[in-house]
Image 1 (tube, rainbow, N blue to C red):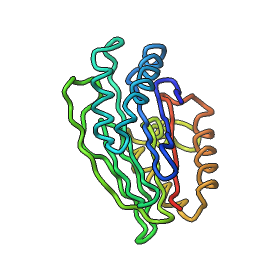
Image 2: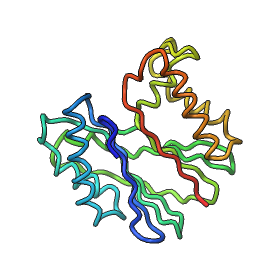
Image 3: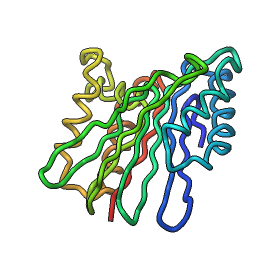
Length: 212
């Protein structure tokens, strides 16, 4: 789906493999939306390399560098084998993917190094592998989510710039006991309440997964 300058897609490759991409185009309006639409095409064309997220980002970068108004974008993609529960992640300047681990209870921020897509034609993206277990949860998102967590209960942006990530992580810990569906509802309510006074400054996209 394309949400303004945000883009995400989840592709079921077969019964035990999925590929997922989330991205955030710099800027707003029509240029960002056009670049996001071009990204969707590039991602679809790169899916034959789905088991290598780093290679997917390399292919996308080569397709988009120097295109429409030289827009840059951040992106993160993962490949998940549901049978082995092996997660492979690559990142292009995007916020980290969070793994919410049950034992011991902790949140791991997964962000392999990688430059923004469109920065240069010849970029190489490293990968990280992480073994998941049942009941682990994954949060995949764009940085608009951090901005909302910099607002107070009245929707005023009174909290320090850059505090959004720490506030979000604390919120996740505070609501840890909730089932995934209930946590999503609470998150949607939180975002809605803090957006009533003024709309978010950035698009917000997020995906939650639970390993069964």
